[in-house]
Amino acid sequence: MVESNIEYGEGFYGPEDDRMLPFRWMQKKASVILPAKDIHEHQFLSLWIFSNFANYSQKIALTLDGRSLDEFPLIFGWASYSVHLGQRETREKGPDRLELTLNKVFPAKYHQGDGRELGVRIGPMAFHDDAVKHRDAEYFLKNAVLNDREMRQRKTSLESYPTNLGVDIWGRCNIKPHCVYCTWDMMKVLEGDNVDAVVDDRTLESYGPFFKSARQLVNCSIGEPLLSPRFEEILDLCQRHGKTVEIATNGQAFTPRTIRALAGKPVRLYVSLDAATKETYAKIRNEKWDEIVPNLMLLNEERKKAGNLLKIYMVFIPMKVNRGDLEAYFQLCRKIEADSLVLRPLLNLGNPKIEEDRGGYHFNYKDEMLKWEELQEIFRLCEVYSKTYGVFVYNQFDFGLETQARPEAS
Amino acid sequence: MTEHSVPASIDDPEDLGFSGLPFCREPWESFYILRRGILPCCHGNPIIAPMTDWEAAWNSPPIQEIRDHIIRGKLSPYCLVSLGCPIVQRYLRQKNKEKGDGTILPPRRSRILLAVNRVLFRIPGKIYRALRDRRMRRKYS
Image (cartoon, rainbow over all chains, first blue to last red; front, side, top):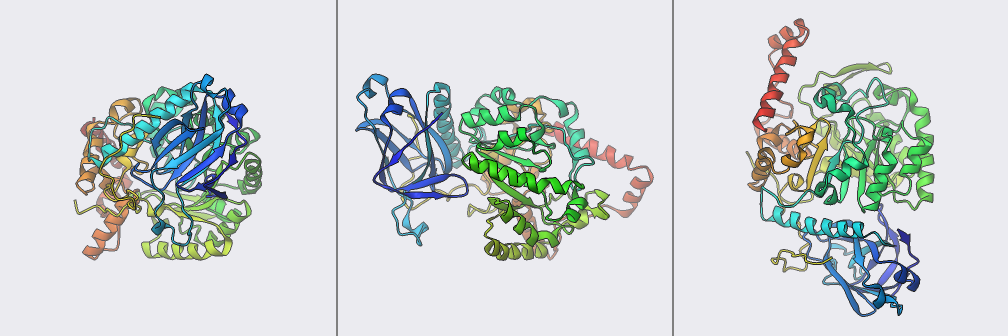
């Protein structure tokens, strides 16, 4: 991948950042000047595009010096695309003006405070010569369109593959005894002999169409993924194929190796602390609080040096044990410049028999679950603290609310 | 990037395309290949197939049953026991509110059974759960 010195021409607005990628809004039509040297030396251009349309009805057409290169539908949200720049002989004279044209723009009624004509967000662009990556990007887009169509056609047996792939990078943990709310014992019984099954970059590639079709990989290990000896290779593979990775970590496995692997990668790192003080942390996990915050600050510095692709999301599961830490958690998020504070529900396990004495506190899972009214008060406080400390809140209790449809009585 | 056919019914340039989507997209868009087994979404419970059967599980009867219920605007029996799902939680909260019951936890088991289980070193409970999980696996395999 070769980062390019691209000159943004007509139809582009100034640089912005949306907590995911640095970008520029483009109007319905825009152009960029690509360095002639890069066009001559490379076969493909990869670019990140964010569309606000969820039905693939927004399309982009690209022409290079008047010669049509490609036209394709855009996926909702951020996605990486790859464009073939054409045969070398036709490019040798040095065409360098890339024109981007949309079939329609983001309707003004959805951005009334912003009077600009907004088409799509154009993120980082880079040249490459990886034909496999290009083919995979084509395959990915074709599958994503088919997947959406099959869902809208209400099909139950699918020819398409999922666009989010959940994986299980590592089955062991460095926190022993495990966190007080972790269902470790139960999960390890279910995992059986698979606890030590190898899941690395080669395994992910062996998933074939399931890997190629995924826009993002979500790690759902009952274990600490940063401990994987192939962690760096896994992230490299995903980056090479334009995939983002979601990883949850307990924050106790930051080493020079893992920080180096994470910085500069398109990773959404969910750091599960659930506490803002040493005392509360000891009630949920252990006494190792002191080393966590400096490591997070170091990670923040390293990711900034590496282009800020890594996103740090600080997870807070509201429970009885930690609700007094909420404001301090916002302050901590601000201190380490987290991209977001994530409110995550404590898993409803029915009538769990999980009790533990830790850090001078008796943790009884069932009693730790807050009532809905108490949670609503937490949400209200989050709104206030979010404004006070300038920390964005991502509330996972809202999962599934983006569509109007609701389940009926079964 | 060529040969992409997009549904032709998209006429309204103001429609962002969220209408017409099912209330949950997970069983179409997501798939979890985990050490503990295959899950149709991150909130799913129990597993629907062993880890090694990932290829066959994608269009297996349990996932098709979940998709079929969602298409009809309903939660499948599988979803209804996946209590970690916020969509299920909202649904149960609403149902219980209509019934005048504020709790979203399943009904408590008899105190006598709980006492017997405790006296017998919780072995009956373990046997019960093992049998229940086996039944569930058989049903979905």
